[in-house]
Length: 573
Image 1 (tube, rainbow, N blue to C red):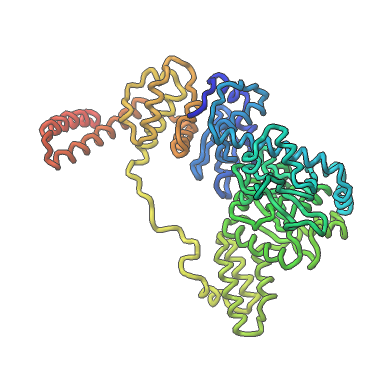
Image 2: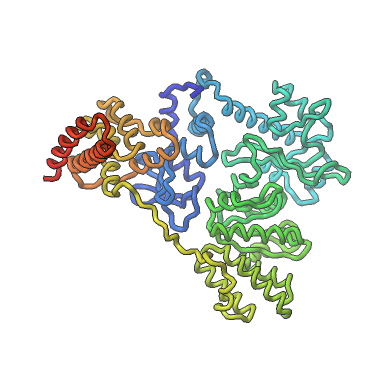
């Protein structure tokens, strides 16, 4: 690594950040015995298999294998570099990090600089909003209150071409740094602000850092599109962010998130007490957005605008959510309505009733198709059924698929048998007939892991250990044993958190599984015998291969084989 850090500082950061509290900030955990359980944030699942151990300060998913400590969690959840995570956790626990020794890791320092540029830019825009009468008048016309403006840190980008540029260069930032951050643009002869004469919406990540902006044109003679986003950068990807998710995840009601089209819809809903609304950043809803929402909610309610563009966006979002097996429902309005205008016209209680009455996503799709085709015309009806079945094939849940097939049968006046003819081969979600056959017997793998588990938690077990690292049945476990052996064995506590940082992600997952094992009453001596016996058999297999090739050392190999067979016989008697 290109950086150095004092181990005592890392130890203090780890000690002062409880992993249960950290993860509970991202997803709800429930007490389950001595551990905590929740739905895994790294894969879509119905039954919680994500376990967090407060005692061991580790997490492990028994569904997808993800696991690690506080640093690996932040890396996987927010793509945080180690130093970013260290800084974030230190700030969270009020630990002062020494400035020296933070090193020269380029990506870390570039991202840190970008966060600072965006923090300063957000403050700059916020202060300028107070000076902009037309923008304040616009917000007043939309019934946006002063407290709401403060809560969402709304701002104004001045009309002047280089207002932000001049401000940030005075703070010591260079031209290329401002361009890379996405707040300024390089012209033919000069550098100018990306956002000018726009109402500004800071976009905040899950760690409450400003990572970008959405800018809305206010005046009719403004140049450029109505909405403009920060350009893609190291810290800003539209497809991986949802506006207000940092706040909405703390206000999940009935395990539900509401997806709306725009920033103003989110703000309007928050202002009337509906705080679990999010929006895509002026871009199409993506699979990644769906995955992100499923971490926090069991159901997504789509509440897009009632115009044609809003209905097309709803249709596509339902398709994406169905493919991911994320339950979804759709709220519908009149042609010229959106959540904000509906609440202004009918009130918040009427909107809440709309949420309750929202229809299942597939039912919405059927209704849209029925508007597009004439079911009294045989040819058009055939096309409608074909398209409906194509959409039905995207529904992963077999129970839902069966229910929707019955609904379609009633709507179309066709038997389910006839409708099934439209289902393409292989779309009934059959389990794959291929199975992965492990080359290592599961009981042997279990013995390896349980033995290593005991070494990691017991000083006495480490002192008794005489096995060579080569005896273990895969590369990760051999490397783990090697590190345990090289650790000072007379110390009481094995440094699990620090050690995990020395492994790559697949290795960390397996090692976390070892750490999270429940101990059993199998004697360690029996585990040693199983591991040794397997090790000798592997050595014999290698020697047989050498003898088969008739190499010049085959006599020596034969001698070794006789010796090993004798040892093996002793184990089996």
